[in-house]
Length: 176
Image 1 (cartoon, helix red, strand yellow):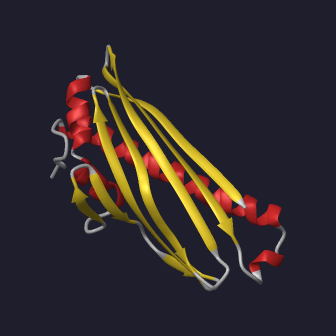
Image 2 (cartoon, helix red, strand yellow):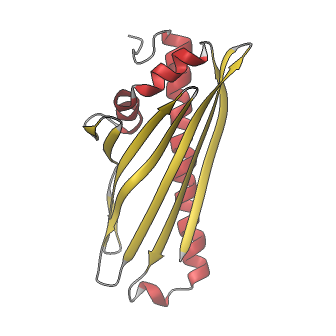
């Protein structure tokens, strides 16, 4: 069974594209604030291991861990999950996850327009007894969960960035 979801945002920050690009190049700080302190490990330049919140249900342990590679280009930052470990469970369960995204920085009279995009695809093979459930029902439920997670993350990502550039005026520094 294959499910996919995407999230995109377009918003403005009152800074030049070059300043926004430098802000995005501080990947570790931005990731830590997005997913929580202590959940990001720097593996090498531009490569981070990100551990998301885990939970267990119906004999499945969902422990998403992504190795994300960031590549900075002028006015664009690309990200790609090189390896994703997501679910542990009974024999017969197979999960393959792909994730990629980008942030583009375009000049705008208000400063910079940031266009962010993320896409995830999950191939899921279910063991007995889950395989007895109607596939369309499982697919719809899984797609709804993945879509909600992607949208929620995109919204939080946007809020962090806008706050940094409008309320704090110095990227990466929170107001007291």
